[in-house]
Amino acid sequence: MALPYLPNEIILQISGILELPDYSSLLRCNRHLAGLLMPTFLNYTLRCPNTQGKLALQLAAERGDIGTVNALVDLGLPSLITEGHHISYICPTLTPTAIITLLSNKYFSVDARDTLGRTALYIAARDNPTAVRCLLSHGGDVNAATYRARKTPLMRASKSNEPDVIRILLADEETDVNGQDLYGRAPLYFATDHGCVNATAALLEY
Image 1 (cartoon, rainbow, N blue to C red):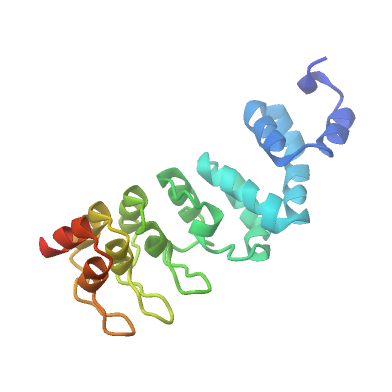
Image 2 (image 1 turned 45 degrees about the vertical axis):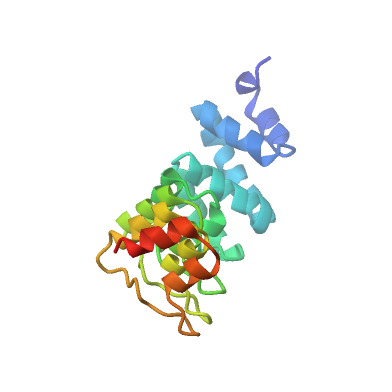
């Protein structure tokens, strides 16, 4: 007999031994199962918030499931996750769908910082131009600097030899192309010091 046609009591017993990806699949494929298993699923995420909980939030965000994200936030899950307020920690890939889904809930802020003071934009500036563009479109602070070294997203992109990211950042009129870190180093310094020819060329266009 197919799982959806089993008695509810049996389904609930089976759900107790499921792994998180199996839960996610069931919630997506059958509305009856989603309604039945959602309370169990939500409680499951609280057992190990930094593993199952984080993964549940990530999967929901990546598939654009705003309802599940809201339910997990209402349950208090993000507050139990280390760096749970930080969208790039929840979804390291920072796909546009994940960004938009998480930012649809007021719990998450586009400029939230991790323990080092890095915003999602700073992290994305290393190698993710699509995420950079999406975060800027949602009001990300283009000049947000890290806590100690005072490094900006533009410095990160320059050091990483990411000309596409540099051009996206510099297209924002608020970007400080000559901003300096704690040691007085500007983005052009990072590009030239690391031998980043493409990044240097992109910076010199402005």
